[in-house]
Length: 555
Image (tube, rainbow, N blue to C red; front, top):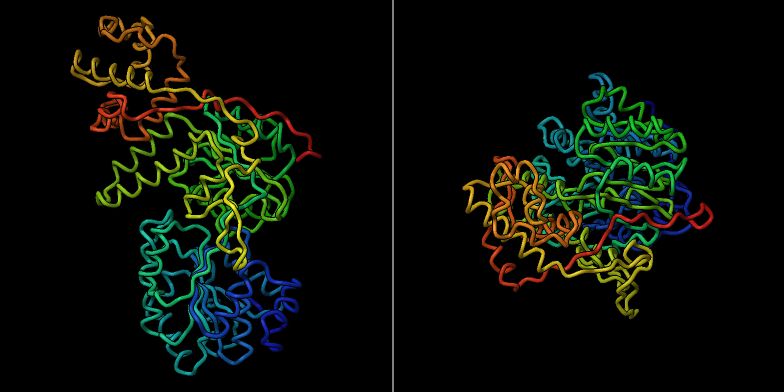
């Protein structure tokens, strides 16, 4: 790793560094206040959406403090791709930076360590696993003893919290940085953290005295749309052909196998699509990632292993073919679209099986019951967003304790009224018709109960709906379920309607799915309130109609 032509000497003024090194004329939003806080030696917790310019919030203080003689800044990141991208960009800007990770051989790593020990670097990037090793801490001890340890920047700080969407135990040990080097300022940064996760970050990293900077989570250029899953692959292809032909995008799938299938399907249909998942050879993954970053119009079909730290500004859409685990994950993944500020789409297809799968993963995990309860609550919030008939943006921001139209980073003294409609999500553009599914829900629950009572065993969703709709299938006849008193009493409901009802019953905990018994349905304590009519079930009539096609000029 050759050292670039150095720009590490010069003005220590943050605005001068912004212009001289990075070529920007002015800071955006709270960047200036964050940079001033950290450059002056204060701690900070920064919540800023993807694409908001988080990296400048620690890179500029690092350069300013290096020029003032404070030495090396350590950036803790779990992402090798981000390390490579940022170090490469810093080299091009004339800043001496390096990384220590598994891509270096022994001699290369030793060279970086020696340059760090001599305080020749302005920024050193390392993964939390390496930062916690005795060898690395010894390197930091040497710098600290000479007053050459300038700053700790902890990126993706939500990883420290068990309530976050990407918990990594090795992040917990980073508390040692404050305990061992209390005089060195720290900045922790994340794009996604609800109130629970935020509190956990403060506690785990001992940031009680840090100044908190919470930017608006709103990405006004992103249009949110969620459709009912029927034939997801075909729906995705139609979406790309109608809305984003020839444009770059990311498609998220839950499994490696699904990634391969969808990438092949898109490629066969003429879409320039590539797969990306942890099971691919590392060289293939790197090649696909490089093509996505450098070529135009590539669609990357990936598991969530792809995306964090990838700075491609012109991603015009992010699609989910499977339901994410929670809103934090959904928000971070959709935030990879439209980083250039131009319009982008966040499109998702979800269905009953998604709800069943996510519930099962939580219920079958070896985690403590308290943790499972929190995860169920997060899943419920995501399901509520998916089933919503009102503005999706209002709901999404409310999850992060933000009132739409009243952002937390608005100038002091500026009064605004909350807004109830964004005018750009699918529900605002085409308000869905709503129907009262309470009667259907009660009939569905009654059918589950009576079938179990008669047969002594549970049955899956399809069979229960066949009974309710009065369909005399071979299986219905085999178990004499045409004799159940609820047979045919829901004939007026379509299968689509009943699936929507069942999704919501599972979402509110009125029905459980027993994965160990072939996804059979069973009632819960929460069923009683619905059966008594105390809990209304209101549903959208259909979320499966495609949006009217827009021309490229309109987009």
